[in-house]
Length: 340
Ligand code: PHE
Image (tube, rainbow, N blue to C red; front, side):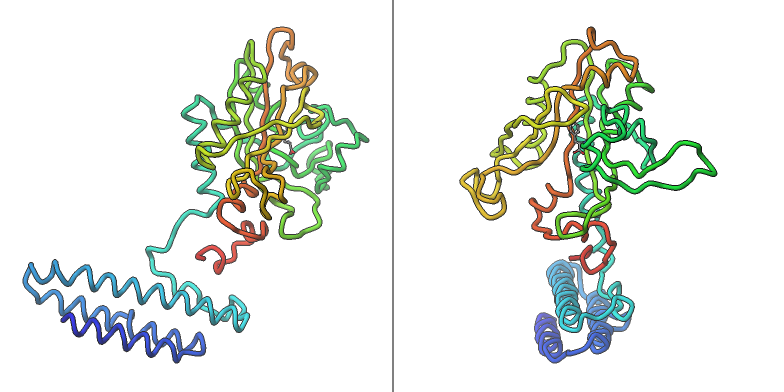
């Protein structure tokens, strides 16, 4: 039976090398992985073996099957990129063995991140994607006409028949800050990992839809040290123990003082490389102490309570960690990318 396996394996490789179209690849797939294909015949033949032989041969048949599946997928990808075949013409799913299903990269990072913060006592707060001006802008110290609105330009919705107030697609998860404070009161530890939207010129680093992860802590005696500790802790959990974070002064209207959080580049350990534009660091988050006016807007007394907010861009982190080089791939649902 071992010889048979070898024979099938080499015949498959030889036939695969001659395939030049997706239609032919389909046929080859049927010949080997179809219901009556070679691999299933092997499984059938195996059922006639005694137990010791089954134990010996079984893993080899499984290995052969996995090898064939992998080779078919790689070939499908090659043919696809050669011909730029439209997805509609290419039965991609035909090449996906059932075991290929897995979490979308963003969902994977979302679950990992939420787990880390659940353990630290944070609760998840889900805010709306369609938001009003107050929670997204004005309540966060960004009144109409404020220059910071340019950075967070968004898409406005004309739903005046339904609602009197102007509505927009939220530009950051910071819209949960006032909502969570109002709904849950203080002391508070909340987080939100979700989609945001901006009016962007699309390119590999900018997408109109993207993700953010927001953390808000409000309690008595909260200070910058807590923020720095949490920031370091999180980055080490995600990027590994070697990374460090640093704070740079940065302006956000809803925090005071505000900081940009940089992580030491994990690719060059801070020496400087292409990925970090030779700086040794890359910006990963914005953060700061919640502005007293924002606390007041939520009915919280800033003389008694203080807090910090921290918001980071998971897409960027994913791209750095996995080498995905176009943010739009994360949102287009392209099966060729997802199974890659
Ligand atoms: N919301 C900010 C942004 O979208 C990030 C941020 C969150 C900054 C919390 C400070 C505090 O860029």
